[in-house]
Amino acid sequence: MSIAYREALESSVPYVPARTVRSLKEELHVDKIIKLAGNENNLGSSPSIIDALLNYRDEYSRYPDFANTELLIRLTKALNVKDDQLIFGNGSFELITIIANTYLNAGDESIYAEPSFGWYKNVTLQAGAIPVAVPVNNDHAVDLDKILQAITGRTKIIWICNPNNPTGTALNQKELTSFLSKVPDHILVVLDEAYIDFYAGSDRPDTTALIQKYDNLISLRTFSKLYGLASLRLGYGISNPTIIRDLHRVKTPGNVNAAAQVAGAAALDDHEFTAKVLENNRSGLALYYDTLEDLGLEYIPSNGNFIMINTGLDSDQVVSEYLKHGILLRGGNEFGMPGWLRITIGTEEENKLVLEILKEIIKTGPK
Ligand SMILES: Cc1ncc(COP(=O)(O)O)c(C=O)c1O
Image (cartoon, rainbow, N blue to C red):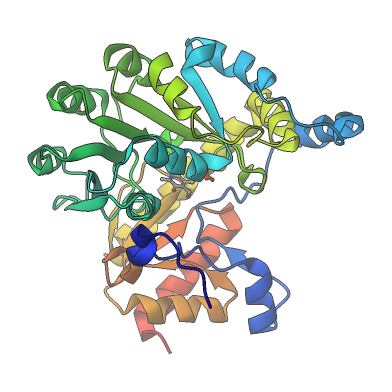
């Protein structure tokens, strides 16, 4: 006899991540896979984390610092917030789950843009709440007016991914301020800023100022992108002390392991590495823009470490074609954007290779 899971989970399906490099190597019998499907950092991570982890080795038998003191010291200073305004998570995936488990009752509605990061829908369904997807506008940007129109008496959370994964569009300070001033203050707005470090436009959102002004706002950040620490699982939330205290009702003690804390603190200190990552992303995007314009292909200018391209071909077939070359990309079908590809910006060499293959595919079609 199987044990019945909670009724709410009837409609909740497991999240589908990008394939792992290991499973693909085994399946394709190749030595090397270039993974550009998970928006990870293909420059790796700061070399300084190695010494930091080695120096910590005598402490691995101890529980981690449950208060995340080193990270707290650095981040409160960098963000100009107080200790009780931060919460740490096992990646921002976990923080999104914690938020849903703290605030969503069965039957509540949670609103998010579509396409956007898929986990907002999963956690909504897990809570027995109702997902409300609002399509992005014709420029593929999160449509704040439509989101405001979707608010009902049952709305509890609005998830705004900024910059938006997968479209790469971004909302600026003015747009967010205008939006927040119209959202009733009993609705929580979650600003998922996983890619904010790659923001390319002007009038970049001043998250700390927004949080000081709006009591129903939380921002989420991650060490998985700019800092290249995706495997260690480290993210944090910035909000007001009341929301942070509420979230601690749900948070597991010691959810952030010691290796993540130690490496995270070292990574924050290495400005040389982050400058290199940002410059690589800027020049990588510029190469994509130039080449795609030459090819006459549509793309969405990106504020992330990835780019969406409209190949005009069946994207599943294009993804398969790339796999033959050992390159893993994300097809647009899963985002409701058939014909499109989402490509993580890689090293210069990787970007050039992706574009060479694209030229070939456009010329001859997927084989
Ligand atoms: C928009 C967005 N939010 C959150 C996450 C999860 O990040 P983390 O690695 O911190 O769990 C991702 C991962 O790709 C993402 O794209």
